[in-house]
Length: 209
Image (cartoon, rainbow, N blue to C red; front, side, top):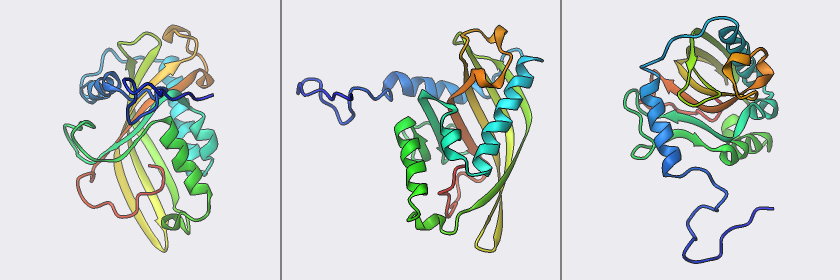
């Protein structure tokens, strides 16, 4: 059961169970620098397992299996799409998306109502990921990965091409990267989507990118 503080000294605009706090923002801002400064890259088998996991994650989006996609994220997750191409900072800038787990679930529920008119008819997407690099995070049991993505979207008789880069923080359920052997052991802690054209009007971006 969710319990919200009633003590006026503790009340804020967010319930106590929310994890998006100053420390969380600090970790997100640290991610921005980390994508440009990778540590020693991991080889097989860990890199191959990560590749298999990311292939699954993107396939679930393209095939509209959003509920299964949602389950690939941790309880303390973030899905972030900045509106700038360099120096992204969620504490001072607007975002196309900055979704914690609750907001991410809300997004999927809205798309399933059938009344999200910006997705009637729904977008058909096909994405390709490449140039994958994987390295250990400074946090035990976590990995970082970055890759290039190209999204093709077909909707209402128009094909649109949306290129960008993905940055992931992934958590291994076994608690040790060295034991990573299967994609089912991984979950997404944070996903940052850096679009090449992030700083120009993007029109209808209500589908998951």
